[in-house]
Amino acid sequence: MPVNRKCIIRLSRYKNALQRLKALGFVKVFSDNLADAAGATPSQVRKDFSLFGITGNRRGGYVVDELIEQLREILGKNETQKVVLAGVGNIGRALMRYEGFGGGGISILAAFDIDPAKFDENADIPILPLERMHDFISENDVKIGILSVPDVAAQQVSELMQAAGIKGILNFAPIQLRGDDGAIINSINLEVELENLIYFVNAAKKGVKE
Ligand SMILES: NC(=O)c1ccc[n+]([C@@H]2O[C@H](COP(=O)([O-])OP(=O)(O)OC[C@H]3O[C@@H](n4cnc5c(N)ncnc54)[C@H](O)[C@@H]3O)[C@@H](O)[C@H]2O)c1
Image (cartoon, rainbow, N blue to C red; front, side, top):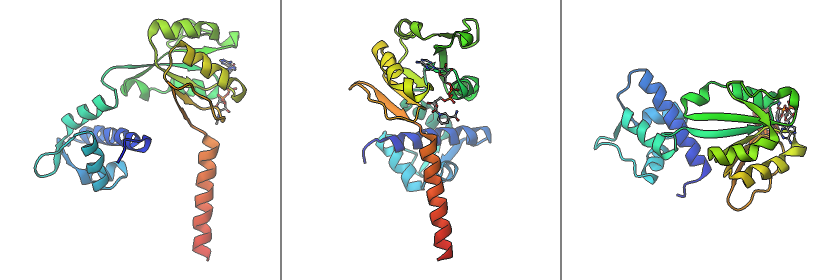
């Protein structure tokens, strides 16, 4: 089984579930505890772990602290991940206010916009003119960018990010972006996600009626 996006999303879920179990006082867990907490099956959990060489003890249990550490290492969470954001509107501000990123080792270092009314160099997360984004990214060696600009601006701003050294973009604009060979672009299209939910909710409703 190849390491794909879904597998890495499951690893993040296991890590979050383990942190909850640790807070509840668990010292050891079994794959079924984790499967329950992360919404997977026990065999899926064991398969995912074996892909990364994570093995439990002979009775199939895992030490919570060790497992969290191994997952953090795989997910690159042992060092703070520096992130920049472009587009300080509804979505951008919500992400900048989100306190959960800090605990997960993700730090938005600065945000960029074209609207001078939004610039605020002294804010906790400084909001700077877009023209300063290139130098900021290269000087701070930032590799991850969040794109929350209007769709018409998204391709251009994504190219600016990549030209400055960004290797991974989380895109909220509802358009398909072209990346260069070296960059990964993950798009979150909320409308598509909702349409998908609506379709399956309707299909289930019809199924009950038939
Ligand atoms: N708000 C939502 O609920 C929602 C839902 C789904 C998708 N989206 C998508 O997310 C993106 C952001 O939405 P929003 O509601 O936050 O928009 P918004 O209009 O509130 O904010 C966009 C921000 O981007 C800035 N901007 C415009 N051009 C720019 C450029 N070239 N460089 C840097 N900044 C620039 C604007 O000045 C503004 O501050 C859009 O593409 C939108 O379609 C939003």
